[in-house]
Structures are given as C-alpha cells and as structure tokens.
Length: 532
Image 1 (cartoon, rainbow, N blue to C red):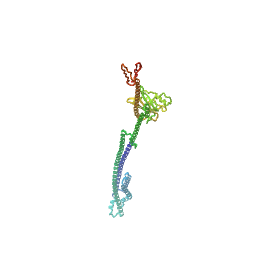
Image 2: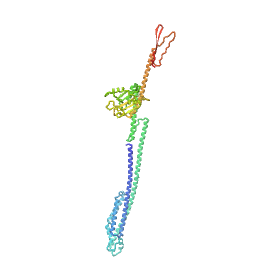
Image 3: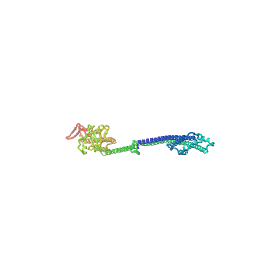
Image 4: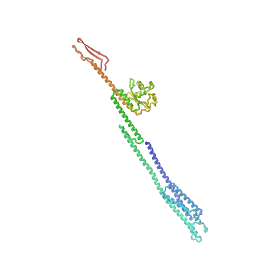
C-alpha cells in the first residue's frame, strides 16, 4: 500500500475510534440522565406510597363521607400503579442490579396483593360502620371505638366489627410503612448501582481515548521507524552508487513509494551498469579495430555499427566536413539510413544503391538541413517522433521508402572545431529513441570524435613519413648520380659542394674525360623546382 493511503487509513481509524469514544461518553451521559429520571420516578413512587399511608391512617379519624374517602384511596392506588409501570418501563431499569430489580418486583407484587385484599369494597364496609342507626351522629372509627367500647347499649357484634375494621386499617398503614422503607432501601441500592455504573462509564470514557492514544502513538512509532529504516537503506545505497558501486540492489518488498523508488534505483543502476559495460565493449572493439587496421574508413564503419548497438537504430551515417566552405560530405553509411532532408530526384521504389548514390552525391551546405544545423551549431539534436513533429518539412508516411520515425545527430567536435557529424536513424514507428539513448549517443559522439581525430592525425603522419622516406631515397639516388671523384689538375685544385636544404634540389653537375688531357665539366641549375 502507498504511504498516502496508509496515512489516510490511520487517520480514519484514529478518527473513528475517537468518535466511538465520544459516543461511549455520550452514551454514559444518556444512561446517567436515564438513571436520574428513574430516581425521580422512584422518589415519586415513595411519595405516593407515603400519601397512601397517610390516607389509610386518615381513614381511622376521618369524618368525611365514605364515597370521598374511597375515591381518594382509589386515586392513590391508580397513581401507585402508574408509578410502578413507569419505573419498570424505564430504559435504565434493565441496568439495575438483579437485587434491585427483585426488590421492585416484590414491591409491585405486595402492593397488588394489598390492593386486592384491601379494596374499595372492603374499605366501604369498614367505613359504613359509622352509619349505624343506633348512633346519634356521624363520627370517626377511632372515636366510635373509644366511646362505644364501654357502652351497654351497643351490640357486642358491632363493637367487634368496629375493632376488626380499625385493626385491619392499622395493619394496612403498617404495610405501607414497610413498603416505604423497602422503597427507600431500593432507592439507596439504585443510587449505589448508579454510582458504580457512572464510575465504570467514566473509566471507560477515559480509558478508550487513552488506549486509542497509546495505540496511535505506537502505530506512529512503528510507521516512522519503518520509514526511517527504508530511508537509511536508500541513503546508504545511494551513497554506494555515488561511490561507483553499480552492483547495488535495494530490496523492493512492499507496494509503497519507497519500494517504487527502490525499483527505479535498481533499474537505473542496472541500466547504468549495462551502459558502462557497453562503453567498455565499445572501447575494446575500437581498440581491436585499431590493432587490426588503421584505415580510417574501416574505423568509421566500426564506429557506426557500435553507435547502432543497444539502441533502436537500424541505420547510421558519418558525414565529414570538407571543402573550403565547410560542407558536409557523406563518408560512410550502414544499415537502412534514410536522408533527413527533402529528396526530389529519386525514382519510385528506389533500391538501396540508388539511395546511397543520392546520399553520396548530396553535398550539404553549412547550416542547411538538420545535419548542417548540428555541425554549424556544434550541438546534438534529437527528433524523437518525426511523424508527429510539425516543425519539419521532410516528414514522410510509413508507406514511403524514405520513411523515418526517429533520429539522433551528434557533432564530431574537438575543442571548438567540428569536423563531422554522426546520425543514427530508426525506420520503425514503434522504435523511437529515448532520452537515455540520446545522452548515451552524446557521450559516444565525444569518444568517436577523439578516436577519429587521432586516426586522421595518424594517417596524416603516416603520409608525411612515407613522403620523407621517398624523398630520402630520391636524395640518395641524386647523390649517386654525382661524381665520386674530381680529376686532379697539375696547376690547381678543384672542389665542389652540393647540399640540398631538405630532400631533392635542382642542382646537378658531372665530369667527363674527353681525351688529350681534357675534361668536360657540366653544371645544371633548375630554378624553383627543389623540394624544400
């Protein structure tokens, strides 16, 4: 995976985890609010039970009509049932401890049992004892119990019923007091459970972001350490490459940018090593050629073949500067070299001989055509895709015999002097020259220029040496033609000196005895015909 997607994925994971942590915190807050609502409902239930307890107590001392007392009791019962239903249906109720839920269930069961046994009909029967016709006026149950207990005029059965009613109502008051205590205990358990739950939620809310942060830091450290190791490995490998070790290969495991970069570096070092080996072989082959022959034409042909080697070229040519105006003249060509200029005097479907004849007959003036531009400017030129280049007027279709798809031209230059150009061409539409081939060709052009310059100078030296040798032989022959001795004269002495400055000269003499003591002396002078 690439580095950028890794970073994006890490950001998404961290953001999602933090979002979940926030949701957990919000959920904890919601649960706390739900608990507060449940606590409020429980307090309301406790208050309602207290009211019910006081309502039951009030039955003993109340002088209000029976229907009014039973109505209040029935309303309180309905309200208790409503409170219990609200509590059991509250969302937080399920989060209470099992003990608290059991206590609520017990409260609910006991209250409903009490409501069944102590219903409004029973209460009405108890309260209706106040309406006994033997009584002079309407009084409370407690009052009647107190006043009538020692009376002989009231039947004992009535007094027993009255005592029983007071006892039952009092027991209901005790039951509601117990319910109230049970609710208080349940509420205390709820508070403890809620406090424990809140602590857990707070701990969870703190621990989740902390764990996320720890994992994020750990992941970042792993990620940065991995990047550091790869950077160190790349730096060391590049240092070795800069130091000249092109055998270095970097591990390309993975699919990130470092692996891609390592693969590119490996390809670069492999290509560079191959090109250096190619140059070594080129120099070796040049040396072999020079060892076998010093003919400049053979060396030129060898250089063209080497220029085409390991490239997309299928044709090459070497032009030399000649003439007083510095024209370019074809010296040698090889392969399917096609002219990079307009040719109008070729027959249809020309043979290779016809094309070569046109190339040799065409003298390129300085600055004319792309070959002349390279020579006059002393710079290498590449036209990678001739067919799609709108700046040239000699582009041809693929069906044309002279079709060219790509061309590279490099000048042969020593110092500021250009003495020729080398051009390599491709006639295949799919085989276009690359920038690397262009750079390699420029380096090859420099090597070829040095080689050819040395060959040309050596050839000139050989010609000069041969001329000197021939002049020496001629000088020896000329000396042999001169007389070895001069005749002796009785009346005087004769001496002669003939010496050329260099090689042959135009001076000649000879001595011929003609008899009768006479000698013929011949002296010749050819003016301006010596060889300096």
